[in-house]
Amino acid sequence: MAKKTAGDAFDFKDAASQSGPLLVVDDLHTSFRTTRGTVRAVDGVSFEVHEGKTLGIVGESGSGKTVLSRSIMGLLPPRDVIRSGTVHFAGHDLTAMGDTELRRIWGAELSMIFQDPMTALNPVKRIGVQIAESLRLHLDMDKKEAQSTAIELLRSVGIPSPEQRVRWYPFQLSGGMRQRVMIAIALACAPRLVMADEPTTGLDVTVQAQILDLLADLQRERHMAVILVTHDLGVVAGRADDIIVMYAGRIVERAPTRTLFADTKMPYTKALMDSIPRLADPSGARLSAIGGRPPDLINPPTGCRFSPRCQYAQDKCRELEPPLRTVGSPDHLFACWYPLVDGVSTAPSVPVSITTNPATTANDAAPTGGTTS
Ligand SMILES: Nc1ncnc2c1ncn2[C@@H]1O[C@H](COP(=O)(O)OP(=O)(O)OP(=O)(O)O)[C@@H](O)[C@H]1O
Ligand code: SF4
Ligand SMILES: [Mg+2]
Image (cartoon, rainbow, N blue to C red; front, side, top):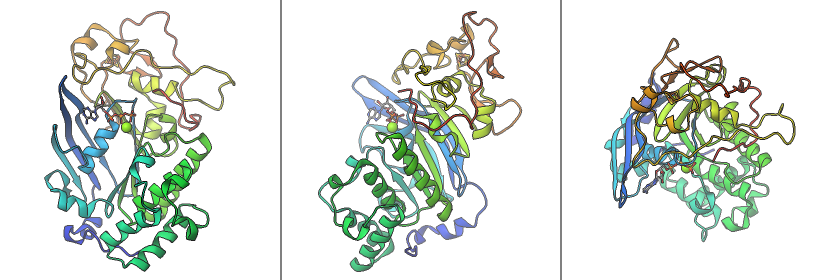
């Protein structure tokens, strides 16, 4: 594997020995000006990621996951975007950097696996050339060295006959193979943090598991941190150390994975859990879908943004926004006025027809690709 030399200008090696989180996102807001009004896609998000750890970010379609990922990377459209808050990576404030500085970090220290490999890969360039470009730019390799490293990278992500396939174009590969190429490109320069935005969307369940296992193996080998973004809580159930649940641009629950499943506080998180297919479910069993639609991010509801869809909503929920808070463990945060206790709402008046599903656990939530969107 190539020896890393990129990123020296930012003293990342010194930062590697620092204690403390690798990534610190603090009160990040990202909005888009549109003809209809301002879309508040990310609305005051804060979290940390430590070296070598996996953070899962989960939420329905439109909850702001991709905008959050791109906002952290600094990969936003050039116009009509308003961003505030800070993103510190290895002690350096990415939000204060210009494009030239960011380009030295992208790929080398911080890389992204995009939601759709067909649009992220260049259709008219051979895959070997696309991998080699990053190696030559960041690691100063000559053409021959970059080509042989590209072959080794393709081998490491499980592409058969990489000596031949390095000359193939993206359209000649299957969806799973293209996603493996995306992973090879993202990992080419041995980054410290990889953001994987729905890396398995559109792939069948078996290929999805293979790709996620591959990413986990490479992560262990290289001691990388990974942010795994998905709409499917089942995908991150057995893979993430910590999980953030997003709703309408905000974090509504955040906890270590086991805690989130064992002691779910927020009804929205519970609803996501109830939509995960489980191995114990009889075949043909219907999954529980979340009723209603996610809110318009130009005019979100007052109070709790989930209140129009929450079966436990009270007047207070519709009037006042619940803050992200904790009761007990400081690493378990949730935004709900009437949190669940043992799966049961603490709201004073709950409709009698409501039955709570049996508690779902991280172990029996099989990552079989359930979806809520
Ligand atoms: N360039 C843009 N201009 C205006 N609105 C945007 C822009 N990009 C994203 N949005 C809006 O921001 C919100 C969050 O979008 P985002 O793509 O982050 O959702 P997501 O959680 O990644 O959804 P999915 O699971 O479908 O990928 C959506 O309402 C979307 O329409
Ligand atoms: S604050 Fe109220 S509406 Fe919001 S999730 Fe909690 S119980 Fe439901
Ligand atoms: Mg997305």
